[in-house]
Image (cartoon, rainbow, N blue to C red; front, side):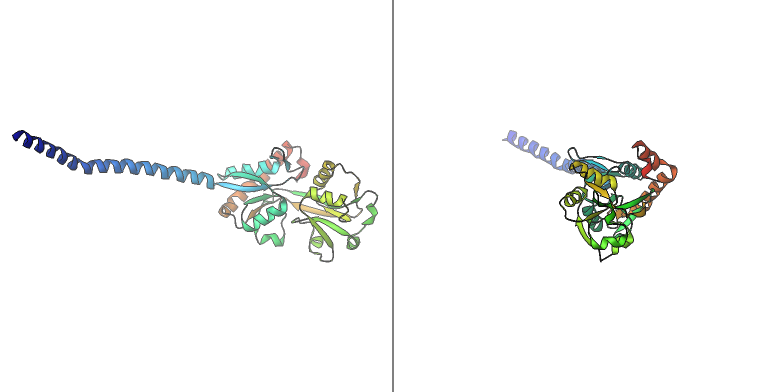
Amino acid sequence: MLNATYKFAGISMYFKSILVSLPSVYAILCVLGCGFFADIIVAAEVQSTHFSKVLRADFRHRPPEMVLDERTNTMTSPLKDILEEAAAKVGYRVEWSARPFARSIHELRVGTVDIVPRTIRDEEREAFVRFLGPIGTQTRDILFLVKAGEEGRIKSYEDLYQLTVGVKRGTVYFERFNTDPALRKIESTDDENMARMFIMGRFDTMVVLDRAAIENAFKQLGYDRFSYADYRQSNRIEHYFGMSRNSTHAAIFDELNRALLDMAASGRVKQIYQAYGLAAEVE
């Protein structure tokens, strides 16, 4: 009986010692747990910061300055290199997506894309786009493509009123043409569709801002029975990147703009164009 009493007393003391030590164990576990969760929170914040410093940009096939290989989704362009270099200077990187230009304009309006290269500046777009640049200028004629042998069909702007004119949706040409309600314009989404519509006779002439791009589209379709009208409109184009006013990164506009303008002023933009054999494309 005495033996049993001693055993009971010993067990009691053992449990008392455990109870006494529990606060210390709890404290240690709290410290370890807090440290573990703190590491997770810090890692999440670092990862969030990393991913938040990404600019979403749209790319389109517009040779020779923007070339998209749809088979491999490879994008090659001096404009791509220029934007990526400027973004890196302000601590950002760029993620690119291939989009038709008309869709890019819509995305700039709603803020689902941050930046679109070669966005021509006009009053309507000012409402939803801020313009980075210009990083250079081009002087080139706006042409009117016709069937071979019909070059004399358009000798002046007024001749356009007698014809149907193919235009690319979302593209800015020149002020009089852009705002003229009397012209019969037929829209298309991109160069390939424009070329197909012309071949099928959907319109009489097509206004052309980017000669190389439309000629490449006809080449891909194996069609060469086209020419350019006698009438053409001289046009000076400034190179801007369009940045959405609704971009989540709108706060970096001034800093990014300075980086791009510094690259233009230092000759870096010209150097990048020269590396692509396109020095004549930018002044």
